Length: 108
Ligand SMILES: [Zn+2]
Image (tube, rainbow, N blue to C red; front, top):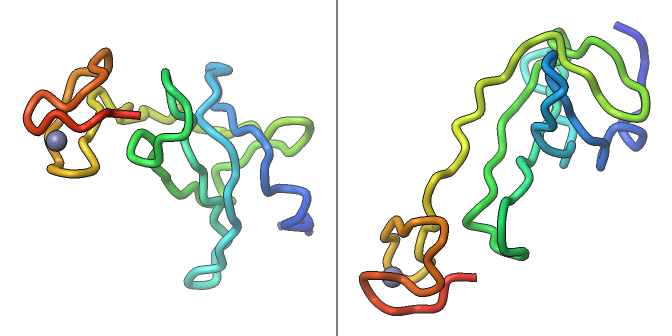
């Protein structure tokens, strides 16, 4: 494996073979002798909602190239969150909802 400084990787955009942006690199982890990119998926819609983002790990083996963006060899089928999870009660609201339909808390 070529040596790539982790500081170069963090914050980079990750794209799959179809050119779809999957997220940005949040961290680089060493686990079981393999290097993994911890990718934080971009939140859609309203900003600043930690409940709307998720992370997944990508093995370094799946990285095709590192340039301005990180291109993966794989096509990652993202399980995109289709719901706004209420931070208070956990109810899954439609993405268009402004307030929790169960407890009424504002969804940000
Ligand atoms: Zn709620």
